Amino acid sequence: MVRDNRSYNENITLNSTTSPWLECQGHVNITGTSGIGVFLKNVDGPVMVGCHIEGFSRGIYTNSSQGLIKDNILVDNNQGIFLEGDADVNKLLNNTILIYTIINNFYKFHK
Image 1 (cartoon, rainbow, N blue to C red):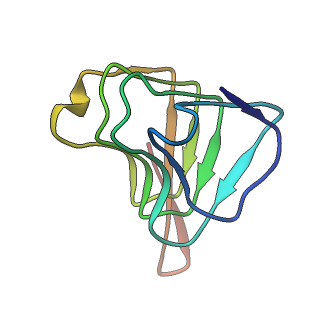
Image 2: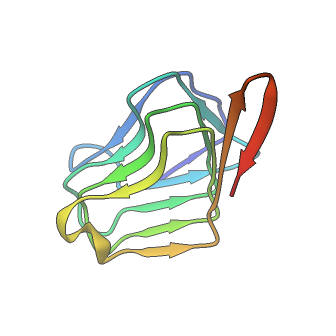
């Protein structure tokens, strides 16, 4: 289990060689401009709780199953949470996904 309160300007991958559990504490920010914010890669039962993920092509991407993705805030990612293959056998609870777009100097909010 990784309990963390630092901020990251990079992509994070959780797999069988790392901890399958990421619990963000104290408003952890994971920010970027492309790619995947957090990749839950080929690990059974991953847990991801309480993270703020912003600015990626895909905020959370998983091909893992039997996991829990809970209480995360995903802001301005092209895709908030992407489930691949059998990854639909996960619990997604109380996540907030916000997308902002600027079109012709108007700020448009999608929810």
